[in-house]
Amino acid sequence: MLINLTKGCGIGGLHGIAPKQGAVLRPLLAFTRQQIEAFAQKQQIAFREDASNAEDKYIRNKIRHQVVPALQHINPQLERTFADNFRRFADAEILYRQAIEQYRKKLLQPRGKDIRIPVLLLKKTPAATTVLYELLQPYGFHAAQSTDIIAHLQHSESKQYFSDSHRLVQEPRFLWILAKNIQESERFLIEKKRQWRLQLPDFVMNGKIKTAAATTINPNPRYAFLDAEKIEFPLTLRRWEQGDYFYPFGMKKPKSDKVGKKKLSKYFKDEKWTLLQREQVWILQDAAKRVVWVVGTRIDQRFAVQEKSKTILQLNIKHIAEV
Image (cartoon, rainbow, N blue to C red; front, side):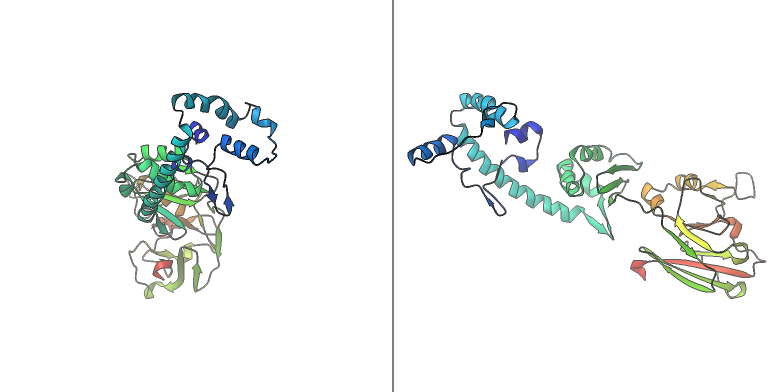
């Protein structure tokens, strides 16, 4: 217990070594060294002492030889006092774990393969830093990160934290616990067909080439209507990359009737997209490497349907939960 207190620990480190841990039993923990030595001598049981017990180069021996005697000078009943403390700390840990489990059920909200924590609920949680540490510790995050996250809750910008296996994306409304690796290399090739369907883990994309006369424009951003004759197949569905740009439909330059070229990074910033939203967006580009559609958001003006358009590429997405 003294070693744990010196190095820093949670409540689990305060009750020392348990007399039973799984299949391991330690039946002599209840007895002092003096009691064990006296019993061995009385029963004439030979024993051997490890020579390293006398060396103060080990932390455990420094505490045994230097710290414990000083504490015993203050409290001659130190061992009995510590035994009572161990029991109280063990009971306190049981109650503590029960409370943490309740907060785990309340604050951890699974969303597919990811998990989110509502910031508003976290702010209302007593001892929020400690609770957050317990929630994040199974994913490899450490106490200092929990402290920093709580201190950052009042800020609006996104921030990331990393463990060996996961990363946490902090946003104004939610903390997101995600797998560490982002699959940036995912690409899907779409050949020219009259009709096709592409299924991804999060959504399904449907495509259809129709005549203009048979097409009714749906303004929902989950739909895209494009002039098929202006597009060079095959199409590629991929994650966005730094340097990508497009001509956002309907966004005209100041004091001009022309639609201006805009980098996607600038578009995301202007639209106040969070870091997580930017990571999850998909881009549809044609064979000439031109962005055709920021999927589910906005098409490129260069491929917008005009009055003279003859054939239309109709696209729409549905999230897996809706299929």
